[in-house]
Image (tube, rainbow, N blue to C red):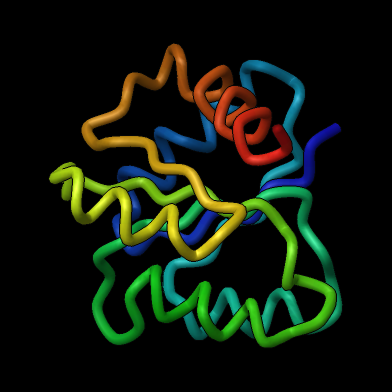
Length: 125
């Protein structure tokens, strides 16, 4: 079972992702609607992978991950950003953080679990 932390401010996207990943039966999913909520969630837990929306009100996904990387138990946890910002320079900037991959929005719910597993494999390679 892959323990996944999903951070997304849009309730509809959280629901679609939950259904899509739940169908695969391979993920145990914890969802948070903000960076602050996610930081509280990971104080005492370590997910196998973090799936972050890039653009959220308050703290962005990038800012959230930067805070998480300061926590020793999360320093090397793979992170995957879901973003509509698909310019190569934006993608390269995210990947430069290390242990990071990018899934573009809109995403296909039918292939989301495979995309996450492929991203994790790239990060581990």
